[in-house]
Image (cartoon, rainbow, N blue to C red; front, top):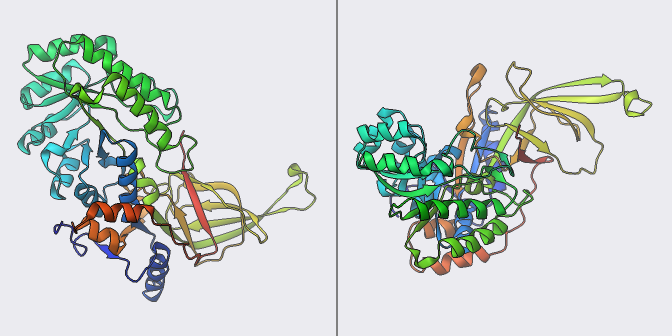
Length: 437
């Protein structure tokens, strides 16, 4: 895959057995020499690659269409394109991005049920035909702007077991599907399938089974010759989530075999985002300020005042960090600590109380699992720059992505290879978990 140019996409190849942590060490040294302390992400393309292999092993019938909104880093998009994934796009800009990075129009689903007319016309001009809908007004727009579109009806499903529910905003009630499909027929539009989304970070695998059964009912009763089922997203991106990806995959496979058996002629796709991105990114931030305060601790049944450390780091809620800290144990004395982002907004607080060793101004903190919905929602509020991204990959994975011979054997060998222990170069390493309201 010659088009994946490491220089063009700022991809750094880890030579001589180098690790991601060693790369971060070196990058911090380089920044220090240049008198720079701006935050930066490191994207581990090996992690993306291994997630692809895990998906293929556990959901062999389901083609992933990566949710571009999760993270738009060019090196990541290009890697996924090289691996043959499709792309779930929600706007003209996202379609334009993935097409510019190697995707073909047939590997894109315009998966937004309410689209501006100009964006629909753009999709038509670029040969993107597959798109979702859930209401009659959208059908009217599509008939006017893209009459040859291949439509996918999004239905509502039970998302009560998910941390972030989506079905209040998107989807048609299954009972209303008949009327929508009749209207599509009157407009001469081609409905090719059904889609759903069980919500973000679903904690009950049975939600997928119920949703697949609902989709089968729509297939059976609507009279259209449909050939596509889109099972949406909601897949966890790390092992810290209570419900494991493998458990979800097992439930999906059983449901698909029951309601959409392999010989039924229906293509199955999904829209994972967090699954691919969450653990692939590590963020490095710098402590640029510190305040020590004393707080009466009588309410905590302690005789002495509490020392409270307040640290200010150069990325926060308006940048990459809509997260809270799940901190590890430390063997030295720890203090109640508050960590603030860099802006003047008092809401820009990363944690209001955690126990940490004393930090010094100028030290760096590494924040793990920061790849999902961080960069894509960041801003430069107060003039603070967004974090830079450096992408890294091992030579072995690079050769596989570049199309060397025996790529299947190479992938399996790489996947089963034991991880080397990372060099713990910094005193403090934080695990971050998504914070939901």
